[in-house]
Image 1 (spheres, rainbow, N blue to C red):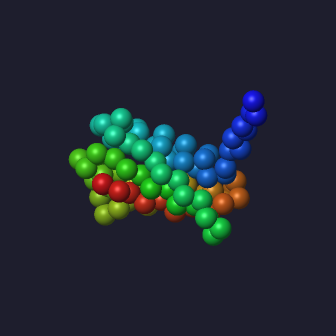
Image 2: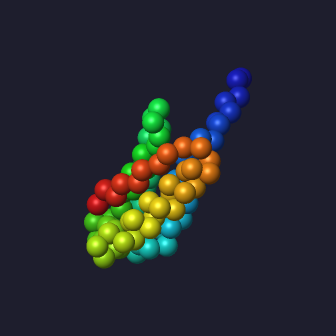
Image 3: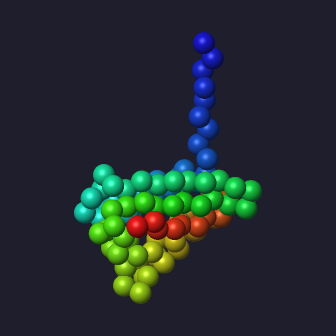
Length: 89
């Protein structure tokens, strides 16, 4: 039986950070899911959440999501990948 080794992608570390931050902001943690798409030019992290919690993640005038994106990009740079974060309500 062949043993599969799952290599951790650099984007996985960034996704873990984004998930940790988002789960701290929302009321319904069970509704939070992340979809990570790795491409040649970087990674896209799509955050899905309960519709009522989308505003909490985005924040007033987008300040909260802007801060999350800044942290994600900074960590992405350290692990060697470019990252974009999008919120799907």
